[in-house]
Image (cartoon, rainbow, N blue to C red):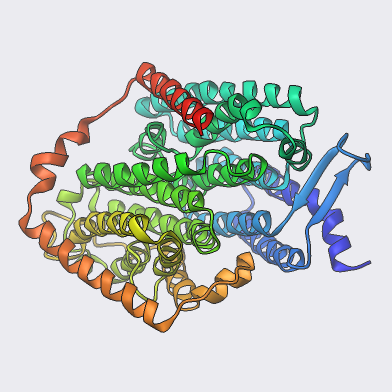
Length: 539
């Protein structure tokens, strides 16, 4: 039996293994070395996911659960895209588990760890399936688990935001369910690959309504304009843990982008220009709203919105370089944002605040924490030799012309955001700071490893693009020099703008208080659906 045959038989276990770890931790929470055993198991799981990625480079792996022929049974499929997402998921959960090894909630974390690994299993199941209805079920389950994790520590504000989150999800998934029903009526299948084959022979006008219904729900999962409100709301909760914010921002949003890619493969070419424009608008809006924030969590959350918009816009360009840049940026941004959120958790623990205006002198307080955070910041702003530079280079190169300048402008906005964020590293603390005990080395090592990963993914960026996504792309020396020059000019302009142009206080700061009610959120969903329906119908 070959390795591919073994992996094909073991595909269901990729979703089952995290559940088994979850049950083990729940039952044996009192065992002294239970968490260490969980870390060892998760590390082995990372190795297994890596072997899966190596295997699918030779072709897609398919398992038919139950042995049913055709599309009657449950079909699990793994191609390069799914394998990368699975590897990214298990790697990020390993980082979160190690970060949480010495949790201050050690004696009450039994259910928390159980839910954390259940979420991992659900996300992996989402990446394995290509069935429309299974996607619906798994998204609903992941939403319930996320809401429980958000409300886990029973803070009043968390309970309210968690309920708002689940109600919004119910609304957007109704769009998906209606679109799924309509699509099944006209195609007769639930499998994405089979549906794509039927759709290929159909007139585009017959697909406008199911496309608009399904993509409205997917756009909400990607946190696109005007549907971006849920992500900053849940990430800014003061009572929730930074590990949950890291998973939400670094991974959960990426599951929405994964579904966006899969649905784009089903409805080939439909709405590409629309999502290109919406993606750029989301990127610009996310940058502006990030600049307006003074809370460290909200700034990072709105920055995630901006980067999600950038990825969707890159996918909307539909050429080899921009597609490769967008796919690579999914991986890069996931690692960067997990590092930033986990690093922000260490910062707020020291300063006992999340207010950026009250955090200064991190180099003086803890140089290792400062260095680890700076590595991640250099990644997200696209500094040369860092991972963000490579993925943004590919996106901009594939754009060309006016769109290339739009992407440069978005990155300039990102630079402004993190120039402001970087003020926390310099000067002297403004008040008493928790200097002891020294940094938790479990947490610090995770953030440093993630930061170093930003360097390795940048220095060897073209290699990783070819290895992870089999992309025939490269960077010329002249192109690298040109983009480096653009970065340093943008950085200089950003520093000058931060010091001498009081835009944040006079123009952008009033946006800080924007809070959309549930009614307004529902109206924005309907507005998005109507706009998408009209635009796609006219194209």
